[in-house]
Image (tube, rainbow, N blue to C red; front, side):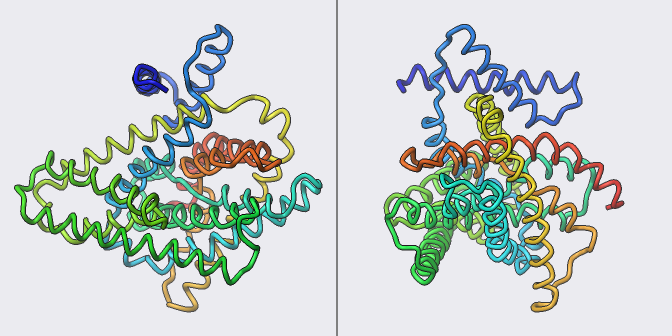
Amino acid sequence: MNIHTVVAITLLLLGVGAFAIVLQRFVRIPYTILLVALGFILSLFTVEFGIETGVRASNFQDLMLFILLPVLIFEAAFVLDSKLLFKYLPNILTLATIGLLISTTVIAVLLYYGINHSGFPFIAALLTGVVISATDPVAVVSQLKQLKAPADLNVLIEGESLFNDATAIVLFGIILSIALGQSEPDVTSAIITFSKVFLGGIIIGSLLGYIAALIVRFINVSVPHIVVITLLLAYGTFYVAEHLLHVSGIVAVMFAALIFKKSVHRLLEHVYTGLHSVWESLGFIANIFVFVLLGLVVSLNMFTEMWLAILLAICGAFIARIAAVYISTWLNHFTVGQPINPKYPPIMIWGGLRGAVTIALVLSLPKALPYWWTIQSIGFGIVIFTLVVQATTTPILVRKLKI
């Protein structure tokens, strides 16, 4: 794409986002759903009148992985309540590791035997399982804040999603390499690869986050200065980790944000509100792009041709989510002695929406895989279902449980 096309698409997406803000004053529909709906209507309009937008799924993949995800991950990590995050870290880590593996396995088994087709082998079911196990609570968290839900519930949902996204991306890469025949389906080598990529991301992110914190100590701390440094930290960390050192860029960005915030928290006290607002705005804009683009690239063929697979995946994802949340919280209660409010798991289950990471992963599937279209259709179907059904009914569940 040339620069004029990039500018035109950016203006188009921002225009849809602005229109949705205005429209939300007249319709009682969550903002993210409005964005997807408007993007889909826009795609139908452009096809009908033969207008070329330049938006392609392949272009969207690069935009998601290299432009939007670093912002979304850094913003999510930076705005989390650090004290509550470290308090509930055992629960969060268990959900993001053991919980993710449970969810991936349960979904894979149910899909494999449910679809029962020679063109959909078990490795395809595993890929689908990890893709739709990555949670994105952006729509639910905003609703929980409006309902004045407890801060620890917000941290549990956001913290799990943050770590869950990172582990899902690493695990996806390992399973994909097996599916493409680039590595052997060996459990030991998979564990070694996972550890190398994940731990490498932690080390690089922590190191760069600490270096950025040292730089801040030598400058005049103001919002514009810190915004420049944190933007450089987010994108620079992702580039160094992913492209130069071949470890997890998402894990690195997440830990860079956490270490940077922890190291300079006292220095940033007088500018934190302004900095928080800037990053909240960047995250908001990134989410506009994600959900409008989802509407633009989704097609009706996915739902007419793959409706049964999507339905099976929705049921499988719900069952897997119940197993993952309850087993993980039970393990934490009986191992490290960290119980959580018994009213929280239902919200964590129903509030486990799918979003940016699921979309990014299904778009990164190579066309060499004969079942890529099935997985992509399932991924888009799950994202839209969780946004339309789960996101809109979570506030009702919160009120029912009297949280």
